[in-house]
Image (tube, rainbow, N blue to C red; front, side, top):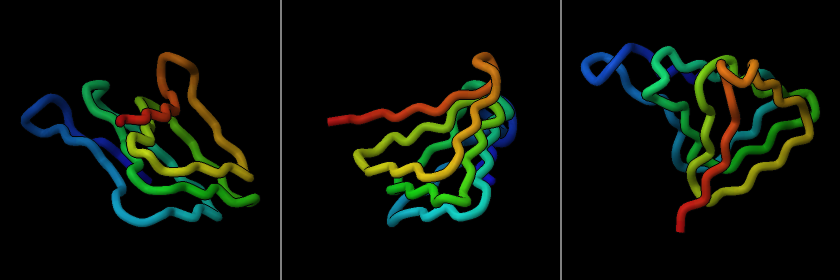
Length: 90
């Protein structure tokens, strides 16, 4: 589970994974409690056939130039509550 916890600048902070790769064969759940923060993936992601990714609230952003392969299920909460985003920076 990735959970950007807290609220505001004093107690809030992003949750992120960096370096290497993530092979998901279970369930990856992302939630954000304060919309000022995002959950970030800075790793290559392979979502296996039995894997699922759930963005329950906020933004799950893959904000690095890494590959994503989805063989499983990606579930996004209603538009106002959650979204998946792939951002490439050069």
